[in-house]
Length: 250
Image (tube, rainbow, N blue to C red; front, side):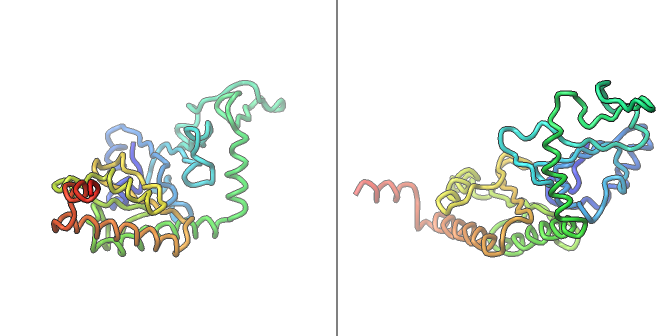
């Protein structure tokens, strides 16, 4: 199983070679569709040779993520795996007796798909491609603005990232600051912190997508830069837990 681009936020340049090696040794490749937000309109999973791919409707095709995510998501397979797709006998074409299944279960949630269908039809091919391009642009804009204040953990070809990036917060552990502290401080500025639980412990993964305006991205960037300035005050001894407690007691 692979994710492309990787969850480290880069397009793996040797992904086709890796997949070919797996195929040569009798294996199959399942692609997690979590990062399709960096692919739609630019490439197809089949082009790199994957055998199975699921699409995360809640990340790329307008479905809300709340409540644990929707109980529906397309599973795409290469032609040689089509006979193994799940099926049920409740919907059949009387003429040729072929199953016309939309959901792999008769009690699934296929109506959720109408939201994604409307989203795709309203945007069209050009609009979907633009969403992808803006997602990648936004992530690289954030990277460039933060690179002097934070270590960007991974970059790909031409010093660029895909649609997300990871900033390394582990370097602040020596002065008693964890990534969770940065996340909580962001709440004071009105931001719910991005992902801090994975893919790298002690780091923050930022995935702006195409949704935010430049003004909001700039406010987000300014927040992280301000937090970095506060960390520098601790590094320089201008602020400490002991000084804070002394000030609070007076």
